[in-house]
Length: 132
Image (cartoon, rainbow, N blue to C red; front, side, top):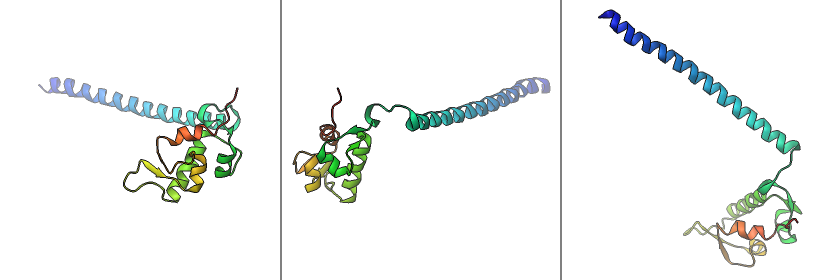
């Protein structure tokens, strides 16, 4: 009976040891993949071409005055607009999806008194110069 017990649970220990070593190897592999992804994104931002919403583009004079620059990426523009909204407490407290525009925001949001937070990207896209 003892030999059957050892065969059954002794083999289980061997399987558990193999599982531990493969889990450790998988963990090491995933951390090396994450490190290489970070280094490739750092290399891309350092010298590679950026495309899409991270590409720096010329912007309209109204948005340029708001951001303090004559070119920006779409992501940076949205981030800075949200920082301004949070800093000046312009979200409607009753409906957080609504932004109450002050005079500075009205210049980039088409003169509207309030906009929905989903409309921000649409209004900002009008201020980016379309490339041919």
